[in-house]
Amino acid sequence: MKSIPDDIFTEPEDVDHDTLKNLGPLGPMAGIFEGKRGLDVSPKAEGPERQAFIERYELQPIDPQANGPQLYYGLRYSTRIVKPGEVEAFHDQVGFWLWEPASGTVILTLAIPRAQVAMAVGKAAPDAKSFELSAKRGSTSFGICSADFLEQAFTTTDYRIRVTIDGPDTWSYEQTTTLLVHGQKEPFAHTDRNTLTRIGAATPNPTALEDQ
Image (tube, rainbow, N blue to C red; front, side):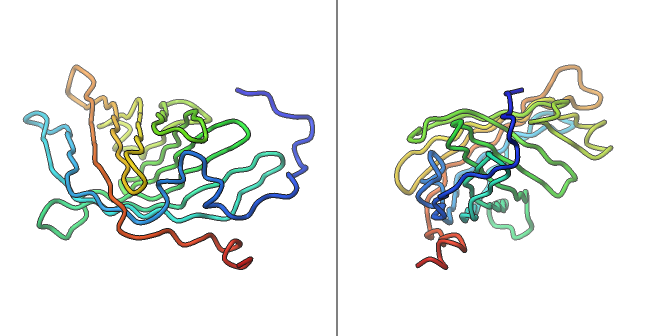
């Protein structure tokens, strides 16, 4: 755990409210994206299943978030994934991508409607073109929390995601969720990957819009 200052209440002054200008390595990810060549490898009773998917990923800037000396810039996101030719969601996820300029920290919060949440963390330079985040079951700061069934039947021990900025309008990710599947002896690496291309611009955050 990193040390905290004696003054935990005073917030920074002269904060730039234009989030799009202060997202560090997350900047190229702001906007609306689509990926048509996703691949999911998940556990099934008969063995691993490989499933292609199509994804719509929207990331919109939020106002700067200060809490005492802590200051985050971020993107509120939602991603919806379907199987090719289908309408029903294959995967649904919401959360925030956050950047803390003072410490060079990137944070991903995620929630999925199978009753599971997680918070992953990593370090990056402001102009980084790739960065990796991780979360671990049992951690009280950057951990994983699941409802009873998932905790017992598909225990998530680790989560890791690597993001690569491929260009001004394209980014990709590779993620691994390590599972202990009930009745199976070895941990299972549930993997997902996709390349996302911009189909829409981001809308400036509310305070930045008000200042225009």
